[in-house]
Image (cartoon, rainbow, N blue to C red):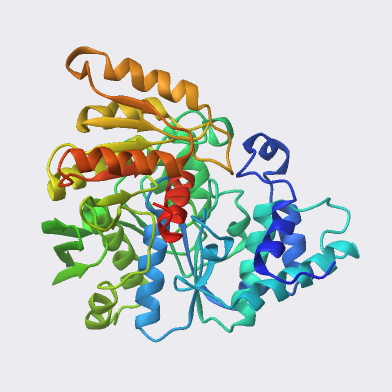
Length: 448
């Protein structure tokens, strides 16, 4: 079969065991032997560039985009591999956030298919998973495109993630929370152990704010491998934070220097992501050009992370799917818009929708429960029933609640409801990257 488009090519890759779509299969597929074999067969493309490797529970994608944008501004050809995507798989493998031409993906996926068909890619180790193939594809494309640097985000965990056969120049670990407990472990310490697996012997690691039990695990791993350990809470000071619909500004103190930062990224949490990125890069680039760096931060390509679209009403599209991320989102929305608005919420199975809704429901005037359709399984009825229990409890009685499974119809209802409220408050879409992606597609296709 000859592939003629990237969409057809990525459908082929998605036909393999897909841990993102079906986490249960990871119990047998979550290992590194096959990935190591494939890299060897393909001539170790992961060794063709310098890398920054990022793990954590939240902020990985934002930190990756920030880091890649800085490296690009410094004059390096910089590739980036992130997940998940909002609309197209091409978003995962980019040149500092900008997708390659369609033929680049098609050509590389066709080459992988030929190796799978003739049995040379995996030997007797069985068929690869979708994520393994995406990771290998990223490495091959970045090598072919002669990228000097690559910014790589782990897909799940870290220790046994397909990206973890790279030896980076520096690692970054963003805040760790309870997530994927059926795979990574049911305590913060166990999950931190998996994330700490990206720390390599002698390779410096920059760590964003952590809870004490997670921080202890990370420090011990770094000590064991004699990896220089840089904790943002101890080394970076952020002050004068200001949030606006069109971005954020703050003052950053690092390595004895004080810098005024302005960025197009909105949200209090993005200031922390920028800080951890700068902390990491400053350790491997002692002469980091802060003029170019601060210039780069004014325009970071990033979608679906507190992305504010339009006015009257403003539509906030955000992929937050953990309680801590939701807490930061709510705080930033209140600072920019004040209290209230209409919530469009959806969550996939495996995520703690109860904790997210506990934080969200009290902050909005009306609530719409929708479904992140087309990728991961969700129990929309359970999410709705829990939201109903919150809307009818205590001070939240009489709060309007709607169940609209189709994201397009949920957004249309939210916008019409907001028009009746005067259009000055936001419509906030959150709870899942897949819901954010569905809404982005509606807005992109102008179907509203």
